[in-house]
Structure formats: structure tokens, C-alpha cells
Image (cartoon, rainbow, N blue to C red):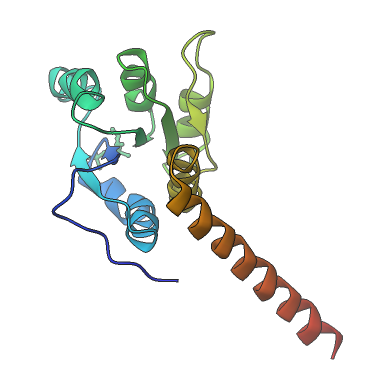
Length: 168
Ligand code: RP5
């Protein structure tokens, strides 16, 4: 399934990351948004190098029309948690693979204090982060619900084909 992302329309998904070195991983989330025709934006914002910019982004995200934020970070991966502390929008954290295979990133993102959740996907799991963002938006968007149903039907068809090929 391929859909044109309307770059002119207001972004509904914010994809942020601690460094441009995270982009090769985070691009998968942008690709999912484009596939579902959901306008998105991508920014480098660091919880440590540009904390004020990251805070401003989080504080203004809701009023700018974003519905979900996907935040990727590696190592001492504080960006998703800091952003989640400053907005009521759902935040999905993507642990970036690092010197410790991403385990440091994963634990930094997933171990949030009670009251400030970050929905954390697997190390490098930007594709699933994108799909989850679409599912969140789909709760109030029947067009996206239909596209998600078609997407899941495709997955099932592919899986049944794998089963058939293995058995033959
Ligand atoms: C984190 O530090 C970034 O999210 C990135 O994964 C990691 C390394 O950043 P660079 O030194 O490559 O800019 O903040």
C-alpha cells in the first residue's frame, strides 16, 4: 500500500531525535506516515545539547496540531521522557542502537516514573512506532481505520503465503 503524504497539510505526527545520526533508524517512522498519507515533520532536538529547544517543541506541539510525538534517542536517552513530561500528547519512544547494543537506550526510555508514560518500542523499532502513531490517530479517524484494516489484511496474506511456500 502506498499513499502520498500531503506535505502541505499540517503535521499530525512529530518525529524527533537526539541527533542526525538517529535519522537512518527514525526514517522508518516517517516512511510509515507517508505510506498512510499522514502529514508529519522531523526534527533534531537534544535533551542535553538543546534542552530549551526540546522543551519549546514539547510545549507547543499540541497547539500546533500534532496528535502524537515519536521520539528517538540513544545512550543516555532522555529526550522521549523529557518531552513526555511537558506535553499531554502520547509519546512513543524509540531506543536507538548504541555502544551497548541499545540496551542503555532501551532502559533509559522505558524506566519512566509513575505518571509520565512513554510507549516504548524495541531497539531500532521506528517502523512499529510509526504504526502505533497511526493507530493512535485512527481512534478518531475512520479513514485511517480502513487503511489499518487493509494493512493488517496484507500482513495476513503475506504470512499465509509464507506458510504455503514452506509446506510446498
Ligand atoms: C543521543 O546521542 C542521540 O540520540 C544519538 O543517538 C547519540 C549520539 O549522538 P551523536 O554524537 O551521534 O550526535 O543524544
